[in-house]
Image (cartoon, rainbow, N blue to C red; front, top):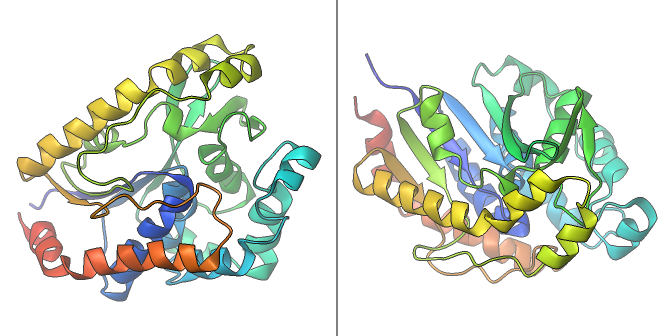
Length: 285
């Protein structure tokens, strides 16, 4: 009996264009998994893998990256969200570049989005089967960065970015019964996260949520431990890791279509060069 395979996708805002490139090549080559889990950009771009929409992530990002309704200080000042909620999570998926809800729903592969419960400072790994408006709220929460996003309230939870508490959820997938995983990272080998320079601002903005402040204070420590665990599992043959060959050097809120395309193409090139190797990993019993 074969062991279940999982797909784990790190976040990283517009570094997620690297992930989008990897996923498109996987879909073009008919690669499937038994389950998937995404964090932040890994969730909002990764959900297109379950809906089998090749090219959708790069397409709408190229089209709208310079639209103030999509991502702008104007949106932040007017609505409290750097990424416009109405535009990003309603108008785009329902009208301008429709999300294939039917295919998403019919695809039996479980998809989990990681969010942070701001009241407890702990991660929530929410299985999202329907691709409907409620699921979109969890996707939005997963990618809602502190300070530049309003807290997302859904199902009685108060949620923000999953990267606060579980940036690289490989262990979370393993604990759900997926012993062999493909992990898509958006930082190169050897990257070490440092303590956030935003902490003073976060302490003010999140003053009503002390557990989340504590989580942010140790986020870099947790991240570096997770990155080390990924490397350990990679060397043990339990994980196949796709990472950028070097720092992607892209703004978290990149507005230049050429830069988005550059990072997307790096993702495509990286997986294309290792496609046979990955297929062999997935075929192992």
